[in-house]
Length: 156
Image (cartoon, rainbow, N blue to C red; front, side, top):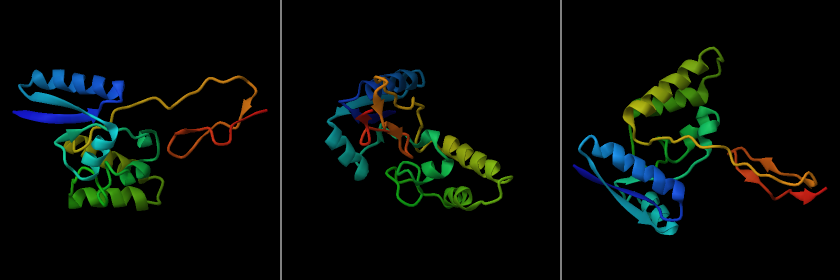
């Protein structure tokens, strides 16, 4: 069996992850053909679902599971992966609508178990972006997607 993995040629991290997957799958007898692509071409392939496997980046993993459920790699409503499943849609609706704080953890666990079992997308943990600045720099902040924002930065 052979499959192709597209990844950004501009990302050393994605290239490294692709090589790790290639090595791991080889132990199972699966040939993973690596396809480095220019970022714009990769994004177009992902948006139009013209790939077998592809890497991408998303910082939503550290947020509330409801944020991931609307991420286009996980969303049952607008999905880059094309994955459709009625049970999955129900699980997403449960984490988005459950108001009982005692029931929310189980809804999250059910959603996560399903995502991991189906493996239609594979999350890879990353660090939150960080910056080192002089103490005079003021106004750096993280937005809701854990992206470090500089638009309010100034010397104080």
